[in-house]
Length: 183
Image (cartoon, rainbow, N blue to C red; front, side):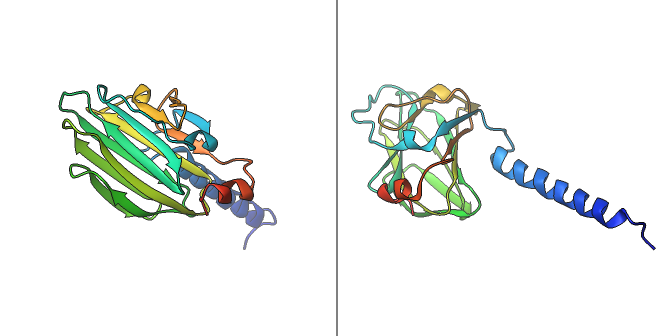
């Protein structure tokens, strides 16, 4: 027979475990790393324009209802690995490649992984964000190391302080999301 405080204690323990589990899911990437920086989602909007081809960098922006990623080389062969991860209720769909050397994998609807070995041409992919996306996590490794200065976000080419970087919609109104095609 259970004592009078047993059920509330079991319930409280279960809720604590669920809370810790859901926090771990939103605070870590597929590789298990905590967020290196959290930025407002609105930074993604706008094409970065002319991109210098002489440095290894990854440009990420939103335009025309799609999220675009362009990887530029610096002339030396480099191994690039990246990951896009949205909240579990979101979906990354309609992936379009404009890059013969870029490989993609999508082990879950909310996770897209890519890798390549740079050559002398930029590589690009685009994807549509769908569902209830509250956070977009971006991770990037060049030659096996996270390099936040190589990630350029949006028209202003903002750079995160650390990787993985979370772009959060916290506080955004639904009209803002619909206006830019993220629905």
